[in-house]
Image 1 (spheres, helix red, strand yellow):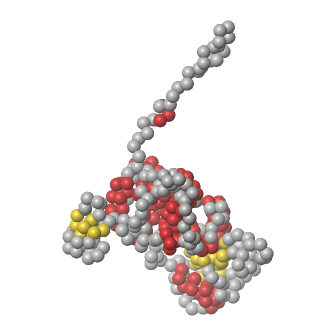
Image 2: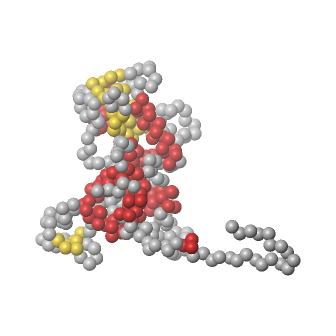
Image 3: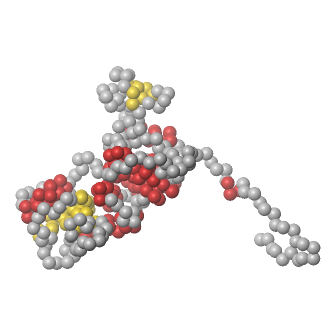
Length: 350
């Protein structure tokens, strides 16, 4: 068993930070310790938790060089975030995550989720093949003074590609933010996400002609509504997800990260167990390079003095906690007042 099948099993597997660290060690070094510098397999664990290589004397930790590199957030919190991120149908917002796990600041919850979104794209993933629908859509809010759904500056242009399954159904998808809808941009989108030799179904946009001129079979549909059901359905689901889970509050600079999250879950919607998505996400996080906070912030602002007093903010507490010993049984019982002389006691206690 490589992954938990349910939430109850997840809680029993990862009840402490040491359990989480051992799982990361198994994911990163399934055959034992491997030095990242020289590749030697002999070493020992030091008292501070790091590993020391016998050959080159290099010292490293299980989390070094991964998404969890230099993190001050307890691993139990990280694992709970990964579980909610991967297994919930609609994901989770940073605001809900902050409240659920008692994270002291919104920025910490936001940065954890965006680090996971950056790891959702597997390096060297296979391109779409077979019959693929391709179209573009606009995602974003309305700006005053602009008219029309394709008005420049109103929304963000997103390219959508969806595999068709025979005799019916849809397979994997790709969603990428595009700078414009010119032939050069569409050609780059198609070549990066669709395998040469595939049949590409598009609408009558002229930009697709140079993009699909070489290496693809182009099937063009003009004037018929609903002939691209896969693209239309995926785009509608993505927009509804952004409006529902995130209240539509997505900056254009970070939209690609949210699209990566949506594609990750949608392409794996037929998995046998939701826990399998958790395992896939953890493998991607372990293989991904570290992501610093300054790399995530699109518009950095000068750091302000925290308004809260010392001790009321900081890093989230670990989920590893001792049993509560039934706190609902340890409450103080308030006795009922005695009836006054001559007053009948009509109160009945069941």
